[in-house]
Length: 542
Image (cartoon, rainbow, N blue to C red; front, side, top):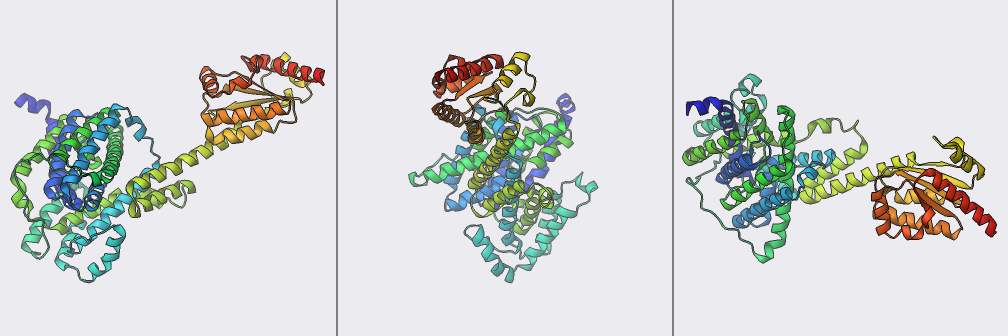
């Protein structure tokens, strides 16, 4: 035993410290979700345990997070408070995460553009703040969507519970202004929850409290799906799975940067998925990799995944004997903690630079943020990704058009061999030599096609494909359109340097059937000879 403790001293201390940080947050997130404080604790225990043991990030500590809590609150509200259906969503979300990992989708989740992530996370931060304002004022949260909650705030603010408001302010102050030397030894959330609860019992007894919390081990709950609720359940499960994957993998990247290690994205998704399935089956809210708890774990000396499991075991011990004390925690105390959490989630560095960063990124970020708060989380991410993708494609197409070169004689073409230069110059401008660089896709296909057809007054268009790694269906169709348009004018299109992958795509698309043998050449010299012969043949026919 002593040897084990000595060998894993860092993991033991890291897990214990992470559990101390996680306890008040799990309680707060559980209450904020609408499922109750105990659901937050069981989410922290089960997701934390299985993600640590089965995940792909050695130092990761998982459990309920701000973004996941916002989605859980939305799910419970949309399902009319049906907790059985809500926990079924958590189970399905875990299954989808496992599927993501098995299909190797982990590496793609990290490709979500930064303005989208920034807008999404900032929107989540604002939602957390909005949801906690009612508790801060000493009232139960008003029903309805975010707009309705905002509309109800003036009436709530007109008649605040001053004791609850004072408690919230005290805890928010502790969270915000605890000196770094003290915060390094005792986590501010723990100080806030202990001081706030003591103040609530002794000084502010009129502030509403959590109330009775069941103790003991939870009974498993089998998934329950009503046919009428199936579309909503599947949609929410996808949102939870997608958000949990992004949240966890971003935390994994943070852990990698601090520890100089490399995580396994797909294994991490599988571990998170198993943890969420377990949480859903035993009445816990969904969780993901938690950045703050992970960093606390690392800084406390953790070196392996054992620390995450220890964090879960410590929380389990606290749950089995902590229910009576936790029932006296004022809701305003948890609101003060979560107001700071919501504030920290907002991407303030990006917002402070909003006037100097590229305008397109600002538009994407603000659109994602506003849609996250006022529309729908999944829609916000989808719209943000589509906007960012279209912007990227447009910029790539513009860059590709700038690299496209057309030459009518040897003076405008580089690196020509003597015979190649002689053929091009001897044609008197009737041969156009065109160089295309980069992948040809739907973004640039039409522009490249128009550029090619601009040579219609010439007799032969020779296109260098040696720097084109692949083409998509749109580019293939545009190329076919160009070939047919120039053929009607009696002009020839000759390709050379076509890579095997590109040749295969053009063949499947039916483009190559419009080109005769010499019109797909291996080298530039062969292509120019074919162009010269075409011009000679055209002159003879005339």
